[in-house]
Image: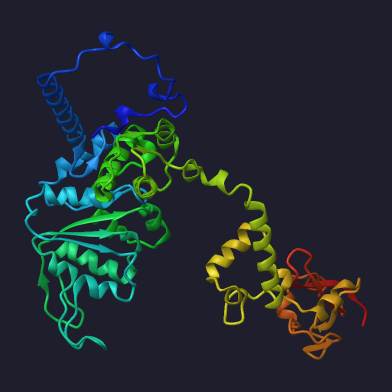
Length: 460
C-alpha cells in the first residue's frame, strides 16, 4: 500500500475538521448511489491497489528496495557476477545491507540450491575462528571430544559469506589464502587435505587498503578477495530511496503488529528525508519499528527528537562531560603516579582498556608525565636549586681514577657516567684541560622528566 500517496498535513486541518455546513434540504441532496456503482468503485479501488503493489515490487530486487541510480548500479553488478564463481568483496558502511547483497548473489547463482553459510569474523573469538572455519579432529585440543566440521566443509558446493573479514587474525589469514588458492584445507589436528568447492563472498566496513599498508591485513589475501568488488552506497548517498524503504518497513511491521496504517504524517515524511541517517538502513528500520510499537492511530508519525543529529543532541552536555572525564582521568593518574597500564595503573582503576585511556588522554590533551613523581620530589622541584649530582669525569689520560661519582641526591635517575658517554659533550670539547665537569640533573619543564646537563668545567 502506498502510504505516502496519502500524506496527512498536520499543519493544515483536513476538510472534515472544519465547521459543519448548513443542512441541505433533502430534495437537494445527492441521490444514493446504486449497488452497481458501489461495486464498480470497489473494483476500481482494488485494481489501483494491485497496480501500486506492482509498482513497489518493480522497485524491489531480492529484498533490496530502491530505485536510485546508486542502488541500480549495485543490482546491475549483482546480475553480472552472480552466474560466475568469482570471489566477491562487498564494502560499505555498517547497516547498508551487505549481507542482503551476498544473499542476492547466492540466489542468482547456480549454487542457489546449496547451502549459504554465514560467519561473522568480528563476533568469533580470535582463538576459535580457525577451528570454526576449518573444523578440528577428535583430540586436537582439550575439549575436542569428537570430530567437528568447519564452515567451509558445510558450505561445500554452496556459498560461504565471511562478514567483517578485516577482523580476521594474521594466522587465520594464511589458512584463508591457501583455501582461495588451492581450494583445499586441513582440519586442526588432522593430516589429510580436504578439497572444497565453495564460493567465497567477503564483506567489510573498514578500509582494507589502509589495513594492508599498516600491516594488519595481508596484501596477497586482499588481492585474492578483491576479484569483483561491490561498494554498497550509504543511505545519505541515495536519499530518493528513503521513503521507499520507509514504506516497505511500515507495511512489514504494520502487518506484524496487526495494525492498519493508512497515511503518514507530513512532518514525519519531511524528517525522514532530511535526516542524514548515520546508521543507514538499520537505523531507519529501528526507527520505523519503534514508532509502530507506539502508534495507536491510522496515521503513522515519528517523534522529532529521535531524528536529531548527534552533534545537536549532545551539544549542551559535551563541555560538562569532557570536564568530568578530565577530572576522573587526572585523579586516577595522580593516584597511580602517572602509570597508565598494569594492575596498579590508571586504566585498571577506571575500569577501561589501556588503549581507550590513552586515546582519552590524547584527545583531552592531558600531560600524564607530570604525575610521575611523588609530593616529596615535587617539593624539591619547587625550589630554584635543582637537585645536583656532582660527577667527576676523566677528561685526560693523566687524571686518575678512571671513574668517580659523588652524589648529594639519592635519586633513582642518578647514573654513573664515564668519559665514553660524554665524548661529544661540552666537557669532551675541553678534554685537553685537566679539569672535571659538574653534571646537574634538572627537571624538564615540559614533561617533568630529569635530564642530564653538563655545565662548564670547574677547577680541581
